[in-house]
Length: 114
Length: 114
Image 1 (tube, chains in turn brown, orange):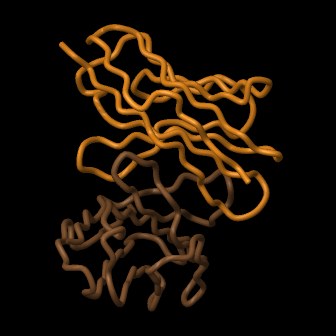
Image 2: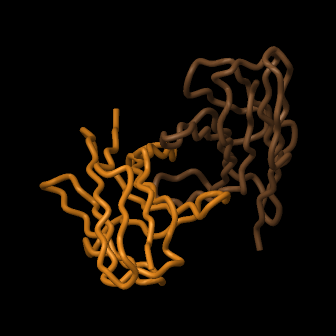
C-alpha cells in the first residue's frame, strides 16, 4: 500500500532563517505531488504541484520554492523565512493528476516563524 | 476561476443530533466536488466525492452529500453524529478538464457535545 511521510512534524524557526521541508511517497511510482499551506483560520492554499522530476508549477508568488530531485521526493524550501510563512504545510499525492482523482495527504508540518 | 464558500466556520451540535455543513461553489465550467475531513493534528483524508451519476453520494461512516447543480451546492449531512465526528471539514472542487488542482473552502469546524 502507499504511504506518504513528512518531516519534521513541527518546526520553530527565526525570521530570516532558511527552510527545508521534506515529503516522500512510498508504494507508487511517478505520482503527482502537491504542497499546500493551511494558515490559521483559513482553508488550504495550493502552493506547488509537480507531474514529474524537475517539473514543478508554482501557483502563487511567494517566498517559497519547491524541488523534486527524485520521483517520490518533494521538497519545500525558503532562503529567508518571513513571519507570514507560519502555518501548517501539507504534502499530497495522486496517481495521475486527473481531475476526479483522490489526493492523499501526509500528516503535515507545523511551522512557526518567530 | 473557481471558488468555494463554506458558510459556517463553526458548527456545534449535540451527540446523536443531525448536522448539515453547507458548501457552495462558483465556476464557469463543470467541476468535480469533494469533501475532505481533517481530524485534530492530522492531514486531510477524503470523505466522499461526486464525479458523475447519482447526485447523492455516501461515505462509509454515515455522511452523505448531494450535488445540486442549479443551486451550485454540495452540502454535507449526517442524520446522527458521534463524538468521533469532531473534526474540520473541507469542501473542494476541481475542474473536469485539465490537471487536478483542488480549490478548497475555508473549512467548517464541527464540534460534537455530549
